[in-house]
Length: 120
View 1 (cartoon, rainbow, N blue to C red):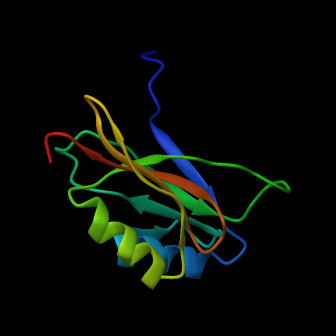
View 2: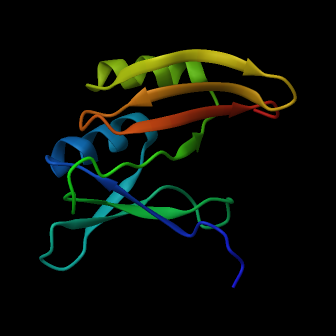
């Protein structure tokens, strides 16, 4: 066992709205898992480091999640977040030797980090 994150689950009372948000902002693809209210999220090319996950109905009140999503152009993504029903909660800040980091919420009010690494 490697102790690495291998999957994420984003709770959403309105999964379709949240799926549309991630599709529009980040280009993610989704596939419903059988007939369940569970949609697998394909967040990128399998050759690129990262993980896939899912959008799901919450299993408990206040179910939290925070994932950090690597992007090439943080300013463009922050504009897309607001245009797609999300909010910028913390404007981008420079993390020395790392890149630019901001925190946003999706329409279901889940919080996500958005990181533009220095090498982008």
